[in-house]
Length: 83
Image 1 (cartoon, one colour):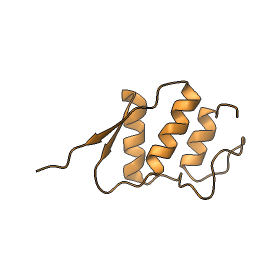
Image 2 (image 1 turned 180 degrees about the vertical axis):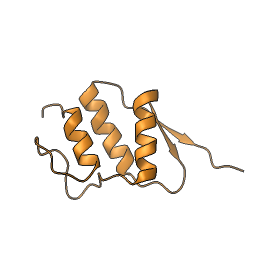
Image 3 (image 1 turned 180 degrees about the horizontal axis):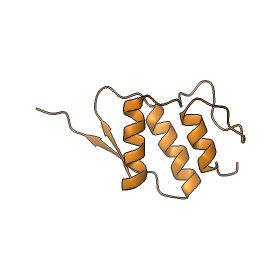
Image 4 (image 1 turned 90 degrees about the vertical axis):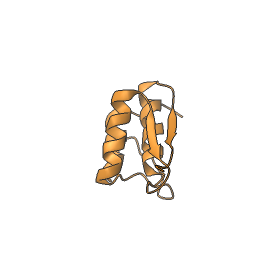
């Protein structure tokens, strides 16, 4: 399978059709506003910081595709729950 392109990953994250037909209907990809903030921070920082609660796996799916498109390692860190 060929590497996805960054613009296709961006279109997929917004729920738009992609040119390369990446993604699957059975896997969530569209991001909410909160998830988009996490995703954009992950693009800048080089790793995805995921809170323990309140986040769907969609942001992880999109970040994984984006890392494949960039040729970067896929790094996800979990935030501990606040006490």
